[in-house]
Length: 132
Image (cartoon, rainbow, N blue to C red):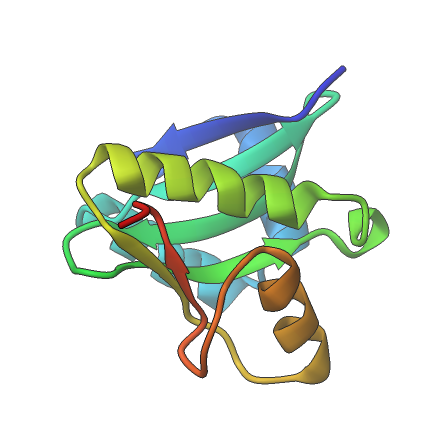
């Protein structure tokens, strides 16, 4: 099977999906994410073999669009799942009219390396979606 991206504009009710999200986020974070998604910020996930392995919030109502709360299940890290999710989020953001995508994350060596590998540049981890 291949990776597949999903966009949720309302908090999902599927129990299998919620169980997968519970492997990515702790309970307080899940509750906050549910409120944020239901208020209009889409949740984007990456699924492989019927399991959602990564998720992130994608704020489309600002310029640049913002990707936050990006998490990849630990057992599947360093296999391209996070990069796939960033690429799908960038496509969604570009289709919504955004010219840039910003990754909101806590600075660390691992995040800096991941952001650079995904094409984000600068201190603000910004990715150009439209070439001038």
